[in-house]
Amino acid sequence: MRTHTPLPSRTLSLALAALMATASAGVTQAATPLPVAAPAQAGFSADRLQRLDAFFAREIAAKRVPGAVVAIARDGKLVHYKAYGQRDPVSGSPMTVDSVFALASMTKIFTSVAALQLTEDGRLPLRSPLAEYYPGFAAMKVGVAQPDGSVQLVDQKRPIYIHDLFRHTSGLTYGGRGDHPIAKLYPNGTQPPYDGDTQAFIGNLTKLPLVHQPGSVFEYSFSTDVLGAVVEKISGQRLGEYLQQHVWQPLNMKSTSFELSEQFKPRVARAFANNPLDGKPQSIPVIDKQTQFDCGGACAMGTVGDYLRFGQMLVNGGTLDGKRILSAQWVQHMTANHLGQDIHNRVAYVEGHREGFGFGLGVAVRTTAGLSAVPGNAGEYSWNGAYGTQFFADPKEKLVVVVGTAAPGDLRKYYREQVQNLVYGAMTR
Image (cartoon, rainbow, N blue to C red; front, side):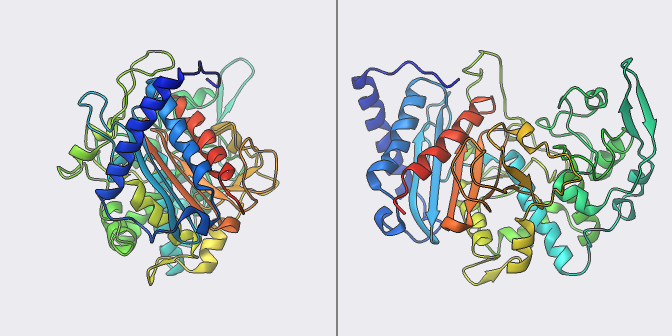
C-alpha cells in the first residue's frame, strides 16, 4: 500500500493542471467557512502546501481515489481550502468544496458534544449508570472466552456508566472486531441498522453479551450510538433535532444532517464501485438509503467546511463567532485522556498510527511526543470516519484540519497518515 510506481512526469503535470483547475473552481463556488489568511501569515509555506496538490494528483491519476476536499485552518484563519478530482466517478462531476460526505465515525464527536451539553446542564452525570436511562443494560452478561472455544456468561462486576460510553469502555463492541467469539454476534459497525427506531436498536443490542467487563478495556464499539439514544431520552428530541438546535444551527453548519435530503443528493461524494486495492465491491450505505434512526456513532453527513467550523469551535475553547457551545473547562476535560492505568488501551488497534494516544470523551488524544507514525504534539485530538473522512486538531499549534474523501477501503488509513505528514511538513513555525 505504501509503494507506488511513479507516474510519467507529463502525466503527472497534466493531472496536476486539471486538479488545480477543479480546485480553483471549487473555492469560488461557496463561501469560505472561516476568514482567509495567506499561508505565510499563518506559518505555512505556500510552496510546501502544493505538495498536497501533487499528492492527490498522483492518487487520482492512478485511480486510487475519485477526489478529495482538504481544509486547513490555523489561528482561526483558513489557509488551504481545495477540492480535487471528481465527486462522482460514474457521472464525472467535479469535486467541489461544498460536496457532502458520509462522516461515519466523525459523527461520534457531534454526539459527545451534545451529551456534554446535558452534563453541563446538570442532567447527565458521567458516573450515572446507563441502566437509569435504558434498564435493559443492567441485565447484560459478560462473555468470557474459554480455552475450548466456548463462552462462559458471567455477571457485570460493576454497572456501565455514561462515562464508559464516551470513552468506549462499556464492554460493547462492533461486529467483526478482533477474534472474540461474542463479536461475531454484533452488527458490523460500518453497516448502520436501517430497520427499526432507536428503541429497537437498544432492544436488539441488550440481548447480546458484553465482550469485556465495563470499565476494563477500550474497545471501539456502538457505545456512542447508545450515548445518542441517551441524549434522545433526556432531551425528548431525535438526536438530529437536538444537534440542529444546539450545535449545527448556532455554528452555521447549514449542510450537516442525518437526513439524506434531496438538497444533499446531488452533492454527495461517491466512491469507486470496487476497492482499488483488491478489486472487491465497496459501498457507502448511508448515501443510498435513509437510516431509520439518528445513529450517533456513524450516520451523519456534512461538508468539510461545516466540520472545520465545528473543529475551530473546539480549538477556541467551545465558542465560535460569539456562539458558545461548551465551556472552555469542559472542552479541556473532553480532550484529556480518560484511559487510566487500569484500562487496557487498544486505541492503536483501531488505527495503527495511533501509538502514544489515549482516548477522551469522544476523541482520541495524543498523550506523548514520539511513538506515533505521524507528527503532532501532546494534546492533539482527533477521530476519523470509515468512509474516508479525517479530522484532527492541535491546540498547541492552533491547527484544525478536515479532509473528505469517498474511500471506504483501507486506503483511507494511508491518506490519513499522508495528509498529516504533508500538513506538518508545510509548516514554517
